[in-house]
Length: 312
Ligand code: G3H
Ligand code: 13P
Ligand code: ZN
Image (tube, rainbow, N blue to C red; front, side, top):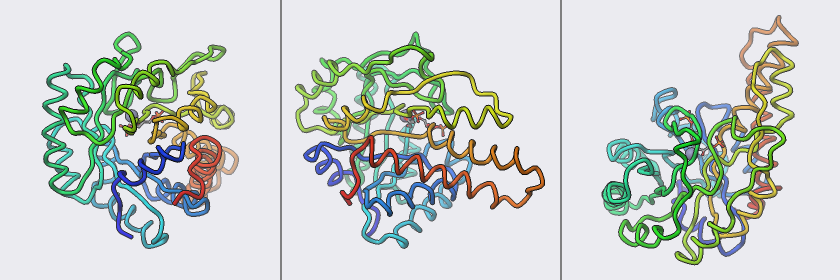
């Protein structure tokens, strides 16, 4: 089948009490690691591309890599999504360029501007059969396209969601309930707690509406250890507890975004080979270990966190 939108995926996920993993892709090995896991576990997936990924690998290369997965697995539902679209132009470019889903991230704008911008993208996207994710509330974290200090982070206000969804016509909504972007989320020894009370309130205001969680990596400590034991210098930090993500996946949360955990897996594999086998200079020798780690991460997420195994 061709690339699909997230509409049917989210409907089934909502009703079935599981979530779809949205994994960031930047190169062939990451696409393959994710695809291998999804194919083996017969799980639908969302492959998402950030502005930084487009700049690094170029739009057409990424689209063709994702389309190659369709050839390998013709029956697997796969959506191609723009992650954190900052303006109308990048959304338009992805809609025109083969994506089936885009995010317009107007979360740093005021409420009215966010509505106006989201509505404009929704109108353009829907006329072309593409679905749209928007965001209310601000997550902490630092990435290429996302730079919000902890002090500027703000939980989503349940009071605003109904009006936002109705006026924009958006298809899914990313909310801030305590997750955060990147590998340095929370201090070790702390007890991160997602605000399930806010999630429940939001669910009440917009029943049956698909909710998205960004910044949902769990920062696997085994990869941090491998990286640091092989010449890396990562600071101590922990991620979002996986039992809480599992709980979220059972509720209105239909899409869970994971990027940092893939980066950690890829880096751990490459560092291990580079450090222990300094004679290696064939990129395949270290990239294949990184790719295998990406597959391991995604297998674990699908089986133990998202609950999407066998749902393709
Ligand atoms: O949430 C952001 C994603 O992890 C993408 O990060 O902008 O560095 O590609 P990036
Ligand atoms: P992580 O940094 O927690 O992997 O979040 C990724 C993300 O939200 C992509 O949009
Ligand atoms: Zn994000």
